[in-house]
Length: 181
Image (tube, rainbow, N blue to C red; front, side):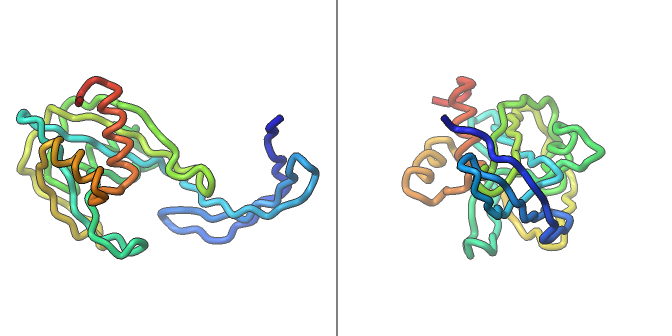
């Protein structure tokens, strides 16, 4: 039978504005002690699938250092502690793209990587929006955005051009919600 581990001690390893790394000493179900490294996120992630009247999905392009590639991703980021998820998503979308979201529909959430992190991301759908507001990028945020048809997006996932977990999860949630075939 699978049993939870018992947390015995947590020590800080590193903390910044994005994440908190802890060294967790645990007792395993077989009574052995083990040190586990956990990446903790104090803020929830938010991302949005913006779909226009022609059925195209808004995708961003941004360089990501850990994978050393310019990737396709959805607009998103971290909700601040003082804001609800939808407000955080609206803020991130406007800052990154200059698009003001109207009504948002929460599609679902997922763990980023539960083997190493408690980070969670919430996916929204937006079909009601206004384009053309000023952007306000973070200091290390150099990105562009473009509209892509869903058939192109599906092909890009199939051939490996899109490998971002948030895009993949958003497509799954859109499919489950009956928004795409």
